[in-house]
Length: 431
Image (cartoon, rainbow, N blue to C red; front, side):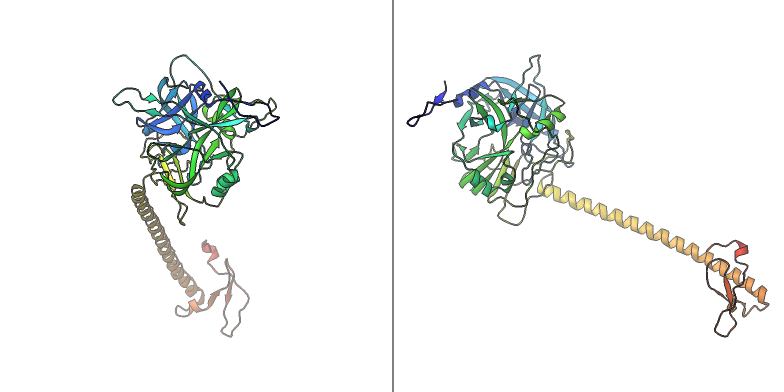
């Protein structure tokens, strides 16, 4: 049953889709190492889906660390589970920036098993939407080996326009308003901490479609539990559909009302990354514990998808109140520092070894040239002595003026006579 708004005088009743309509939409939550995260998956089909890139952990080469045993738990929209399925491939966007959270999307591949196939539509055209739903799905661990139970989805209609405030708090949002949305609406947990909604849906009554994923928040305050204001930013998927289709080797379907709408078909699209810093504490990634650790996520360097090396935490906190910014290091702080020091030591050792070998080769060449020069000098002296008939003064009678056979006889009066030929050339020496 749709909600209705009370009209002012002279207006007609306007039907508005109720948030309970979310129960008709399939959803999914990301698991890591058997534990649920606060990260939802925007389902494309029974085989692929999008997730925020900062919900994943990364290995040293920037690829997603698949040793984290990622799984996707699917819901039919209500509290009925469609099962838990392993993720066999995860690819972060090639321009994902873990410092600013630009291009904060990744594509997951999984197999829901069976022969039943289905697809979800991605809400692409904001001009079509009559409203927006911010939605969160969650699960509760039942303990033991039992399947976690779905909790009822929470949804709220977007209320109020906070665009200017969001832009003032985040240079990234101010520079990419076509690809990010922002709200101050949050879920208040039992511990009085704030938890951002996980997904955003575009609503075109009587339909709705998932359109974006929670990316990060800028907190004016100390934490999610102690703040004066929170600005929550969402990455819209529309500009990443072509990229995702290329990675998945699959078709991604759009939900649009305008038949003339043309989506961004550039697979290399990326956001503008501004130089300014947010005006508060930045958090993102898995916020299920409400206290994310300040461990940065790495910058992916390629579209590779598998790796089994040491990973980082799946949550990220960035403080912008000081001049320092988080490293894009792919491992924990202390471990990574030791590894970097060891690598630097090895590199310096290799450089010193190469320099030593080069100097040794130069020394050997210099020694051989000296031996050659000494031998030539002795031979030249012998030739000159034979030409002058004077073994004591012969080496003083000729001065080399140029390369080849041009030599000049010195007459002892301060000038040179006409060049003459000297036996050097005939002996085959090269200069």
